[in-house]
Image 1 (spheres, rainbow, N blue to C red):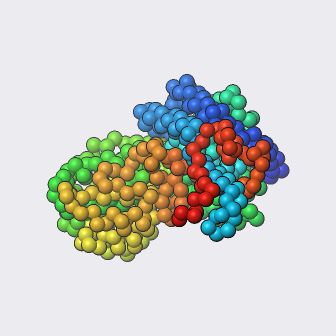
Image 2: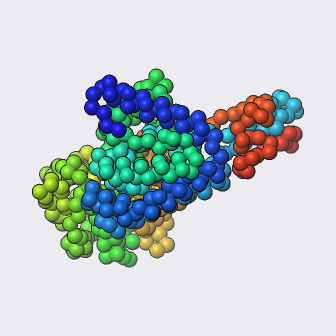
Image 3: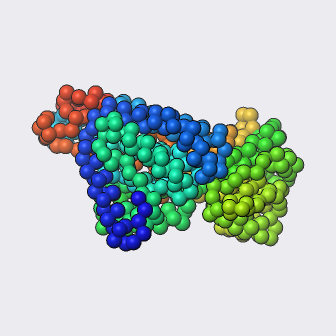
Length: 493
């Protein structure tokens, strides 16, 4: 739904928002089994058309077929995982307080609390995950599982794919019995911005640049009725390596670092933008040799290529930056950019002096090796230079105490003790979010806890059974887990 003139845009936005609101009235009370079945049908529809969808995605994004097939599988798994969440019902966090005239603080009424869907959700799709963070990705799956209709703002980098996925998934949801307009798609930037401000939209999710995310978050906050806005805005994901770890397995660590930076041409939100190693470490030969083996990879679109070319030039232009391996960069006849990885090295003092020119994220296959003088200072260095990230990784030697771990947890949503941050497991315990500027608010966009972003608490006091929503009724028709505070319990506290 693309609009060009303002009146047409207004009609488009109002129609989309109205239809989403109408869908919410039915979807919010749809039985868990119905919603779970709809999510599974959506996953099946994607699988049934995998060859077609992957071919479109390849043409639009330049990502490799094996990567796209894995991402499509991940997208199906996310939908099925949330079907299990809906069926289980624990996400509703149902709490029942029996009426208690002898409660310790005075008579207590009958209170029943559950989590309730917030309403229509606006989801801005990401450029770098055309399946997993797009039309049918994790944000959409979590919102649908919560009982919220979803309006997706398609990313311009893969419009044909977005339209086809929306067509398939919307049909599957309706065939399962969910209301029409449970999933809708808009394609124009103006429509997306207008919907952030539309009163029918009750929450928004965004994955993209810090600049655009901040603008949208500001609009969401400036509404007469501000709405929750979950924005994932970027992360540099520092990797800290101790001297003992390097002495034990330097080649393995350095080769793993190059692989993590280079995967998908570095176009991952968890790419390690910085590797911190002890001063005087010998790393050039291993890093350069591993980087030289990485084949060139197309960047997602000409705009991404423009940004990568500009940011690498800025970083290389800083006096004192030493090039460990200079990767290639070229443009083809269509304006697409093709790159191989570049690695540079700096001292800690130069990193401080250069500031944002080096510290800001470079989206693509580029990373900075930082030499630190003392392990004792690493906690302070992270707090000063890397205050908010999706991930922080710590490589230690055998038996080495992890004294830094508690301090690192202040500055990232996921702390890795070994391994590499690229590759985000879709599983209940995953946290994919972090302190500012990684995200605009606490929460996660991966894992089953992601559903909490689209729910709000509602309590019913002294309500007749027939007026209560199903999970709060005595007969518990949805069969959800419940915590019950019994009458008289407070007397034994």
